[in-house]
Image (cartoon, rainbow, N blue to C red; front, side):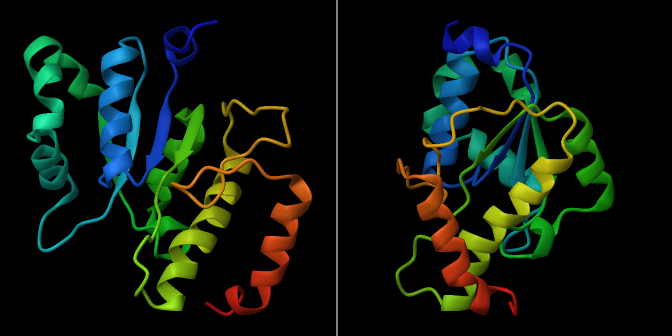
Length: 182
Protein backbone atom coordinates (compact mmCIF):
# COMPACT_ATOMS: atom_id res chain seq x y z
CA UNK A 1 0.00 0.00 0.00
CA UNK A 2 1.40 3.39 -0.97
CA UNK A 3 1.29 6.45 1.28
CA UNK A 4 -1.42 8.17 -0.83
CA UNK A 5 -3.48 4.96 -0.71
CA UNK A 6 -3.08 4.79 3.07
CA UNK A 7 -4.24 8.38 3.58
CA UNK A 8 -7.12 8.15 1.09
CA UNK A 9 -10.38 8.85 2.92
CA UNK A 10 -8.67 9.23 6.31
CA UNK A 11 -9.51 12.03 8.75
CA UNK A 12 -6.43 13.46 10.44
CA UNK A 13 -6.19 15.42 13.70
CA UNK A 14 -3.01 17.52 13.68
CA UNK A 15 -1.63 19.47 16.62
CA UNK A 16 1.17 21.95 16.03
CA UNK A 17 -0.38 22.86 12.69
CA UNK A 18 0.88 26.45 12.67
CA UNK A 19 4.45 25.51 13.55
CA UNK A 20 7.19 24.99 10.98
CA UNK A 21 6.82 21.22 10.72
CA UNK A 22 3.03 21.42 10.87
CA UNK A 23 2.88 23.74 7.88
CA UNK A 24 5.24 21.56 5.87
CA UNK A 25 3.25 18.45 6.77
CA UNK A 26 -0.05 20.05 5.74
CA UNK A 27 1.36 21.09 2.38
CA UNK A 28 2.93 17.69 1.73
CA UNK A 29 -0.20 15.72 2.65
CA UNK A 30 -2.50 17.94 0.60
CA UNK A 31 -0.18 17.85 -2.42
CA UNK A 32 0.84 14.18 -2.30
CA UNK A 33 -2.34 12.60 -0.96
CA UNK A 34 -5.16 14.28 -2.90
CA UNK A 35 -7.75 11.78 -1.67
CA UNK A 36 -7.11 12.46 2.02
CA UNK A 37 -10.30 13.17 3.93
CA UNK A 38 -10.58 16.08 6.28
CA UNK A 39 -7.66 17.44 8.30
CA UNK A 40 -8.60 18.87 11.69
CA UNK A 41 -6.05 21.47 12.79
CA UNK A 42 -5.67 22.41 16.46
CA UNK A 43 -5.12 26.18 16.35
CA UNK A 44 -5.20 28.65 19.21
CA UNK A 45 -6.41 32.22 18.87
CA UNK A 46 -3.34 34.45 19.09
CA UNK A 47 -2.70 38.20 19.26
CA UNK A 48 -6.35 39.04 18.66
CA UNK A 49 -6.59 36.79 15.60
CA UNK A 50 -9.25 34.11 15.34
CA UNK A 51 -8.35 30.56 14.33
CA UNK A 52 -9.93 31.15 10.91
CA UNK A 53 -7.81 34.26 10.36
CA UNK A 54 -4.66 32.43 11.44
CA UNK A 55 -5.42 29.61 9.00
CA UNK A 56 -6.11 32.08 6.15
CA UNK A 57 -2.82 33.90 6.86
CA UNK A 58 -0.92 30.63 7.00
CA UNK A 59 -2.30 29.53 3.63
CA UNK A 60 -1.02 32.78 2.06
CA UNK A 61 2.59 31.71 2.71
CA UNK A 62 4.80 30.93 -0.32
CA UNK A 63 4.90 27.31 0.86
CA UNK A 64 1.31 26.93 -0.34
CA UNK A 65 1.74 28.75 -3.70
CA UNK A 66 1.85 25.59 -5.80
CA UNK A 67 -1.28 24.19 -4.13
CA UNK A 68 -3.12 27.50 -4.60
CA UNK A 69 -2.25 27.47 -8.31
CA UNK A 70 -2.92 23.80 -9.06
CA UNK A 71 -5.32 22.39 -6.43
CA UNK A 72 -6.92 25.25 -4.50
CA UNK A 73 -9.97 23.12 -3.72
CA UNK A 74 -7.91 20.94 -1.33
CA UNK A 75 -7.90 23.76 1.22
CA UNK A 76 -11.55 22.98 1.93
CA UNK A 77 -10.30 19.79 3.65
CA UNK A 78 -8.67 21.89 6.38
CA UNK A 79 -10.92 22.33 9.41
CA UNK A 80 -9.58 24.58 12.18
CA UNK A 81 -10.40 23.52 15.73
CA UNK A 82 -10.00 26.03 18.56
CA UNK A 83 -7.70 24.74 21.28
CA UNK A 84 -4.37 25.15 23.01
CA UNK A 85 -1.87 22.43 23.84
CA UNK A 86 -0.89 24.35 27.00
CA UNK A 87 -4.41 23.95 28.42
CA UNK A 88 -5.94 20.90 30.06
CA UNK A 89 -7.66 18.60 27.59
CA UNK A 90 -6.03 20.67 24.83
CA UNK A 91 -8.54 23.46 25.54
CA UNK A 92 -11.10 21.69 23.35
CA UNK A 93 -14.84 22.31 23.66
CA UNK A 94 -17.10 19.34 24.39
CA UNK A 95 -18.61 19.60 20.90
CA UNK A 96 -15.17 19.53 19.25
CA UNK A 97 -14.09 16.57 21.38
CA UNK A 98 -17.18 14.64 20.30
CA UNK A 99 -16.62 15.51 16.65
CA UNK A 100 -13.00 14.32 16.83
CA UNK A 101 -14.04 11.11 18.62
CA UNK A 102 -16.60 10.37 15.91
CA UNK A 103 -14.52 11.23 12.83
CA UNK A 104 -10.73 11.04 13.32
CA UNK A 105 -8.82 8.02 12.06
CA UNK A 106 -5.24 9.33 12.39
CA UNK A 107 -3.61 11.58 15.01
CA UNK A 108 -0.38 13.45 14.31
CA UNK A 109 0.73 15.18 17.50
CA UNK A 110 3.23 17.82 16.48
CA UNK A 111 2.65 20.53 19.09
CA UNK A 112 5.75 21.28 21.12
CA UNK A 113 7.48 23.95 23.09
CA UNK A 114 10.96 24.13 21.61
CA UNK A 115 12.01 27.30 23.42
CA UNK A 116 14.95 26.66 25.71
CA UNK A 117 14.01 29.64 27.89
CA UNK A 118 10.38 28.54 28.34
CA UNK A 119 9.21 28.07 31.91
CA UNK A 120 9.26 24.51 33.19
CA UNK A 121 5.48 24.63 33.70
CA UNK A 122 4.82 25.68 30.09
CA UNK A 123 7.28 23.12 28.73
CA UNK A 124 5.70 20.32 30.76
CA UNK A 125 2.14 21.36 29.88
CA UNK A 126 2.94 21.51 26.17
CA UNK A 127 5.37 18.61 25.83
CA UNK A 128 4.09 16.12 28.38
CA UNK A 129 0.55 16.91 29.53
CA UNK A 130 -0.62 17.57 25.96
CA UNK A 131 0.80 14.20 24.91
CA UNK A 132 -1.09 12.56 27.77
CA UNK A 133 -4.28 14.39 26.80
CA UNK A 134 -3.87 13.23 23.19
CA UNK A 135 -3.56 9.64 24.45
CA UNK A 136 -6.68 10.01 26.60
CA UNK A 137 -8.60 11.45 23.64
CA UNK A 138 -7.32 8.67 21.38
CA UNK A 139 -8.69 6.01 23.73
CA UNK A 140 -12.21 7.28 22.99
CA UNK A 141 -11.84 7.58 19.23
CA UNK A 142 -14.10 5.13 17.46
CA UNK A 143 -12.34 5.01 14.09
CA UNK A 144 -8.69 5.49 15.09
CA UNK A 145 -6.17 3.37 13.19
CA UNK A 146 -3.85 1.78 15.76
CA UNK A 147 -0.48 0.29 14.92
CA UNK A 148 0.48 -2.97 16.61
CA UNK A 149 4.19 -2.08 16.57
CA UNK A 150 5.04 -1.14 20.15
CA UNK A 151 8.74 -0.47 19.80
CA UNK A 152 8.62 2.28 17.18
CA UNK A 153 6.84 5.36 18.43
CA UNK A 154 6.82 9.08 17.91
CA UNK A 155 7.59 10.83 21.16
CA UNK A 156 8.19 14.35 22.39
CA UNK A 157 6.13 15.84 19.63
CA UNK A 158 8.28 17.16 16.78
CA UNK A 159 11.35 15.14 17.78
CA UNK A 160 11.24 11.63 16.44
CA UNK A 161 12.93 8.87 18.38
CA UNK A 162 12.82 5.13 18.25
CA UNK A 163 12.62 4.05 21.86
CA UNK A 164 11.28 1.07 23.68
CA UNK A 165 8.05 0.89 25.60
CA UNK A 166 9.98 0.60 28.87
CA UNK A 167 11.83 3.86 28.34
CA UNK A 168 8.54 5.63 27.63
CA UNK A 169 7.04 4.30 30.87
CA UNK A 170 10.15 5.42 32.78
CA UNK A 171 9.87 8.94 31.36
CA UNK A 172 6.20 9.21 32.33
CA UNK A 173 6.79 7.88 35.84
CA UNK A 174 9.75 10.20 36.43
CA UNK A 175 7.70 13.27 35.46
CA UNK A 176 4.46 12.23 37.14
CA UNK A 177 5.19 13.75 40.56
CA UNK A 178 5.57 17.28 39.20
CA UNK A 179 3.14 16.85 36.37
CA UNK A 180 0.10 15.72 38.38
CA UNK A 181 -0.01 19.10 40.13
CA UNK A 182 0.15 21.21 36.96
